[in-house]
Image 1 (cartoon, helix red, strand yellow):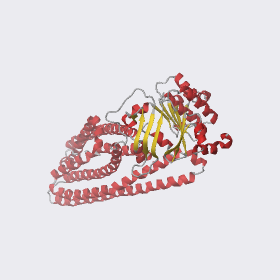
Image 2 (tube, rainbow, N blue to C red):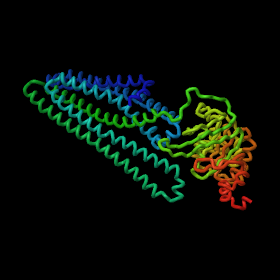
Image 3 (cartoon, rainbow, N blue to C red):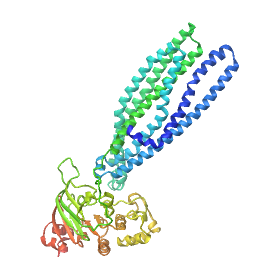
Image 4 (tube, helix red, strand yellow):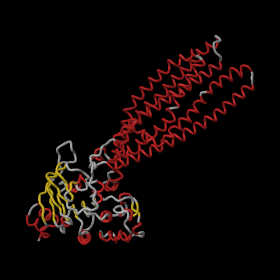
Length: 576
């Protein structure tokens, strides 16, 4: 947790001012019991009304000054904690964006969301409580004990016996609560996972009438979280009655022994009242420390989870002297490439791939599900790194390029079309922020998106919902294609990106690609053989290896896998 305190450095003045105001509040609060005792022993005992009024006014003045100190402490501690939380969230967000896909897969999306939100909030709350209670409780406890001992050293023996007992119970509860809070955060990860899946797949759930099943799944996860939360809450609930019992026994003991001393003439009633007030302050300070340590225990769990993310070294690092280029030709070569997502076992998605794609060439890749098509193209922009072998662009290993520079020359339309909340124009400009309205219209015309965009009342200013809600699958794909082309890439990777587009429109889009993207290397992953017809070369993958390659006519003449796929989709009539 201490590692995270570096994010408080820019706000050190708030960190200093908060306890400074608190110190004023505590010092004045420690004077109140003494003044109350003086009113009883001096003012009331002697019938001195003037002394009572003056001392009472002094207590009121101290109370007002205490309020000012408390308000100042709250203000500056809130400033420090809120800014700390904002910076920590920002740092985590930047870190997550810089992680390799393999790192994100290992953490899981739902867990990262929990860490970025709830875990940061727990640590932020701990900072807030720490600046207000971490200083207040010890100052009040030690100050109260010092003032109480000055009043009567014999009565202080009672406190010396009770305080270690309180410290024992606090330590016990903190140790017991730590694993429970860890379990709470893990159960919260599970809840976020189910919610995320349900919201993303709400249409599928409704289409398959699976609400009851998903409800049971959520209810189970929710029940698990509730049960762990109840156990943690029950443990916390025990702290209050135990501490109150100890505090009441302490007050009784002080009254009993103080009464004996008063009867013997060894102390005054006012001093006993003051001593009880100091004892109450001390005991409440220990209660505050108990709750603070519970907060720290929970925040400690969250801090560890945050540090796991911040301390993760991305599996994909820039080289020490990265190659940065203004442009590339677009020649791609795979040399003995093998790849597996899980480096801990020997499972391979790709095995010994050797392939060269020339600049400006259009290559289609087909193959059955799981044959490694997406895995293969993901290696080009270094979304993942090869397990063995090399991927070269213009005869340079992609691992030698600066990652951002490499990806700036590559356009990619993934299989799962993602659009962001905002205007259609904003989504297309993701590919090129500086694109003019004319350029937007041009790339939309290339992808045949212009017609349906113009049909909307607000045209390119039409708002789309999260993930493109309100648009059909084909419309989303065409906007995503326009976004990629707006980037003006030298390498364009299309991962089954026209699967929701009708065959006629797809043919028109491909025709436009051949006309407009003459100097761009295009790689098309296709499920439909009709998508691959116009490619300069077709690669057939099977079980992570290249089974066949050639032009459409060459592959048909081989009467192999491609021919079987062709017949299965278009029939023998299509072959004829």
